[in-house]
Length: 186
Image (cartoon, rainbow, N blue to C red; front, top):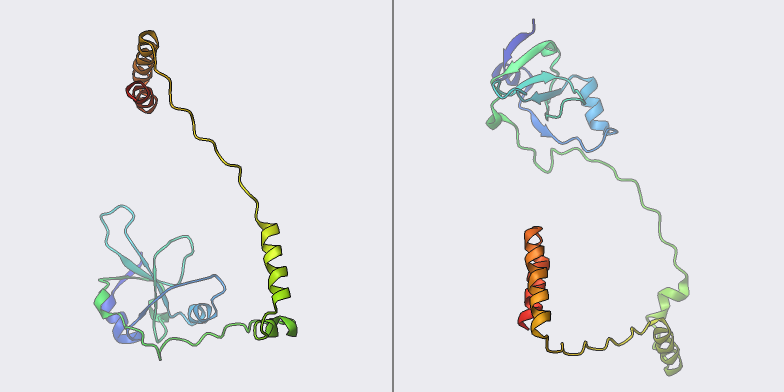
């Protein structure tokens, strides 16, 4: 049977924790803290009856909140930590956050003429060539001819459309029925 420990005792011995957001499985500060037993996973009750409790370490199968403590939690490894007080978490400041180095991006090498092309005034010949290139890239769309106005429907045609609308309504196809009725009215 697991030993039960109050969260306030853990905070007294290991310090105020910070909420930790695990961004990737290769997070070095997380793995360092995990090796030093400074990570606690908060696990919620799955049946709804139990409240949230903490367990030292990280279990990838359980998706819960992670707490990062400033000192080791080795004395609480086989304990169930209860009575989690969320207001006792430490608020990280910008100076406390671990500095993570980002890999340097390779410099973009652009040809020198491209960099200086904007600075040089455009000559009329260049402007004409550029305008011709733009025209070549434009694809004209065909003009759509407007539909001719609908011809007047005879009484038999109106009845046929009304019957089609009724059949569509019987099949629970309200959109089709609406379109047919709209055709009759207009």
